[in-house]
Image (cartoon, rainbow, N blue to C red):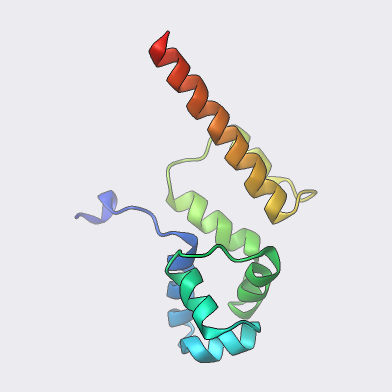
Length: 119
């Protein structure tokens, strides 16, 4: 698959890539973050979503922010709508609130598109 057609990395894949770039073994990184090795493994394989606290700790030890990690995932995927970009920029919201708003917005859009196809 050519690079321009490759799907964007998920949050878990991005965390793994950043951890490997920092040359940190999984066990050591999990200990630094304060989580178990199996939990980190599940996050990196996209089997579990990290809590806001865990994502903040991961980002801190990767010398970035949770917002920057989420932003990297978003910018590597399809261009976000103006609404999603506004939600992502709003610093008065927590990461969990941003995620919930984006999920609701995307669900509303999906329902509307589906209704238009039917009608």
